[in-house]
Structures are given as C-alpha cells and as structure tokens.
Amino acid sequence: INFSTSLPGPSLSLAKNDAYFFSLASRDNYLQNMKFQLRPYQKQAVDKIGDQNTIVKMPTGSGKTFVAAEFIKQGLKKRSLISASSLASSADSTSAALFLVPACDLVAQQRRAIEAWIGRDYYVAEYMGGKSSPSRRFDVLVSTPQAFLILQQVEAEKKLFAWSNFFACVFDECHHIIKDHPYRVIAQGINAWQSHYNNRIQILGLSASLTYAVGHKAVEAALGNLCYDLSVTNMISPTEEELMSAGYTPKDDVIEQMHEPWNVPDGVVPEHLRKTHAMYETFMGRVKHGTNTPFATKIYKVVREIEEQIDELQDGRKGEFRSPLNQIKLAAWEEYAFQMSRKSSKGSPRQNLYDLLEIWYVALRMVVQSWEEEEQLVLQWLLINSGFHNEGWFSYNLTISLESVERLLSSDAHTIKSQKISSLRMILTDKKKAKGVDFRGIIFVQQRITAYVLCQYLNKNDDFFTKHGIRAEYVTARNSKITPSIKMTPSEATRRIEKFRKGDINVIVATSVIEANSNTATCLKKDSTSPKQMSSFPTTV
Image 1 (cartoon, rainbow, N blue to C red):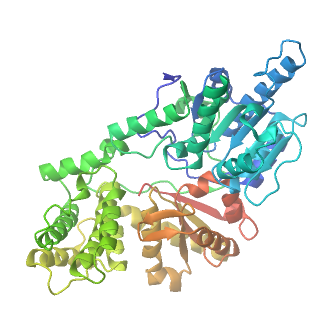
Image 2: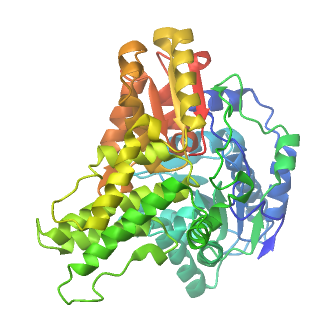
Image 3: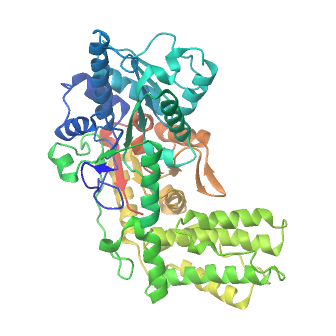
C-alpha cells in the first residue's frame, strides 16, 4: 500500500473535535455561492488519486464529497474527449460513474452536491428502494448499495446498470465494507466482473474512520481486509496541519460549541496513555499489576464472581462455559452471555446468571471504554437494569461483591466525582436559563451505550425536568445495537428527531451518526430552532 501521508496515530482519527453540524440547507447555500475551487488538501488528494484504486481518509466536513466529485468530473471529461476521437476503446467508452452511499437519507444530499460541482453538462441520477429506476442515460448514479444490487438483477437486460457501463465506483463511508454489508457484495461483484472480462472499474473509497477495531492486530487486519476487498493500492490522508492551514474548521456561526472545562481525575488511565487500539491491553495490564481504580476493581470482581458461580452450576459439564474476557472485541463479552442465556432453560438459575452477567459485562465494557473514569454512568446502567438483583441462592462471595458496588450508589461513597458530568449538568442548566424555551442542545458521545445511559442519567435528575424543564432523548445509528438486548429502530430514531424538532424534547444525546448525516442535522435544526439557539457539548465518554 502506498500511503501518501502517514496516518496520524493508530486510532485513525484526525480531528480532535469534529462534533458539529453542517446542515443540508447550509451546504446547498455554500454550493450556490462558492467559486467551485478545491482547497489545497482537496486538490492534492485528487491529483494523488491518479489511475489507482484509492481510499481518501478525511474528517467529517472537510470535503470528501468534493474530492470524489472532482475525481468523477475529470473522468467524465476524459471520456468525452476520447469518445470524440477515433482512439476510443471499449474500456474508454464506458460513460458513467457509480456513487454509493450507505443510507437513503444521503442519496439526495450527495446527488445535489455532485450535480452542483460537475455542472449542468452532466446528468446525475439518484436511486434507492421505493423509487423508479432511472429511465434515461446518466453520467453519475447515486444509489444505496442494496437497491443497486436489486436493480442489476431486476433490470439485467439493461446495459445502463451493467458494470460495463461504469468507469468508476465511489464507496462513501467505505469502512462498511469490512462488515457484513452490501458494499462487500458489490466489491466482490466488481472484482469478479474485472477478472472475467479483463476490464477495469476504478475504485475510490471515502471515510472519516477506516475502522473501529481495537488492538494492533485487529486494526492491521481490518485495514488489510478493507484494502484487499477494494483492491486498493493507494491511501491518502491529509495531515491535521494541512487541513487547518487550508481553512478546515467547524463553522462557529452554525453551532455554539462547549469546550472541556474539566480535569481528568486521579487514578484513571492518564490521557497521554489513551490509545483506542490498545484499550483492552491497557485495562488488562492494569488488572494484572493491580493498578485499576478501586471502582474498576470492584466491577471486575463482580464479573468474575458471576462467572465462577455459573461454572459451579454446570453439573459436571465442565467446559461448557468459557469466559469471553480474553476477546479484544469488548462487545463480544455481552453477546456471549446473551447467546448462552437463550440456550438455557427458561427461568433456570443458569439463565438468571447469564442475564445478570450480560448486564455486568456491559458495565465492565463501559469501565474499559471510559478508561475507568465514568463511574456515575456505570452505576446508572446497573441501577436501571436491575444489576444489583440478588437471588437468595447466590454464593456468599458474589453477594458481598454485589453489595460492595451497590453501596456506591450513595453519593458520598463515590471514589471519583466526575467533573465531566458535573460540568455538563451546569452547562445545560446555564444555557437553558439563558436561551429559554427555544433552547436546544446536543451532546455528542463516542459510544452508543454512553448515549443510552447518559440520557437515562439526565432524565432521572428531578431538578432537570421540574426546575429547568430539560428533557433528553438519545439517538444512535438506525438499526444499531446498543447491547444485544437493546436496539435503536429506524422508527424510534425518526420519532425522537421529530420530537426534538418540535420542542417536545430539548436535549439529544447522540453518537456521531447525526454529525455524519447532514440530512438528519437539518431535521434537528429547522423550524423552531435557529442556529444561534443551538448548543453542542462534545464529550469523550
């Protein structure tokens, strides 16, 4: 792989603070008024693509779409010139580019952006499930992957949708290809077509985060698979200095941002040691050397006590239960407990223990992912999910361990007072008082589980609701799992966004799904909320 620039750290994240809004409306206005000039880092990226299969990694809002649009524009111009000459070959006669987006919400948005960039000389079509297929020849087709796959099958006789009609395929948010996703099916289809017909479609992948894998080996494997599936030989990632010097900054006039007014508590993992890819190894290393916080030690002990009691209930079937704590993928812990519970007899002691273990695996994951810092949220998770439920037949050691954590629910018993949570509460109340009934706030978090629990935490605070009128909901990616037992459905996500727009709720706790989806951002901002009334609270929990 030719890395045009070195990736800034194994966490694969360029922007320190990329929690902001870039609404569809403001983006359209920007396109209408701009002089259609690429920023230096965008132009450099286009130039470096050349004729190679390439991944462009740039933070959200830095203009990846414009890089792709210029790449497509240059390809269309080249083919127009060649087709006008007598030198045109069958490969050169391919006339269209395919631009794939992972969600229906993005189809119209990206179509408009590409259309504005490449000009009216070219026709940009869009397609997704539930829409009529394009009936005329297009220069660019923007589509969701599953809809395009179905289109190729249903209308196989039309050369318009055959691979032979495309000279390039752009995968927006290309990191999805690592998962069980239609992107992977399409990539495999392209590879098979190229091998059979000895022809080529140039691939361009776009992403702000190439992988969410943790652990050196997992990151290397994920990147290797991504490059293999897309046949990528070139990766472009502007440095933060190049981005900032060219004017990449969140728009201050679009959203007011709250900066970190807190300090990292003593005893937790220091900030300079927080490397996402080494999260698991860091925690287990602290377990081994006995350097965890007292709270983390208690949580880990409860988990081990539950595991030991499950092992004792196996009635001679030793080996049936195998602790998943040796797995680097943290979410695999609770998934294992969930699956084992489903295999157990309904209402049996084993099923009860597995249900309890799932709750505590999630608690332990929160401890690890927060670098042992967010004790209040972990306790909130345990409280709202009956994590302190104690059957009379639990072992003495398990009972004692559960009670030792439950006692921490008393406010004066916390070993760590989270300045982050206290500051957040203070900011929310101050902004609500200042902006009144029109106040809207969005709290960005890194983990879906944090969005879920922080929302519960805010709503459990009586002063927030009765005294200040603060009402919160959480939103994560649609159809995404928060835990094996908790899921955000598309209808629920839509309903909560609509409630926020109308003012029925005034605080959204969200993962970066809203930030990455400017159509959703528009829904949140239009009508009752002007940009000056919006506040964002980016956090690192």
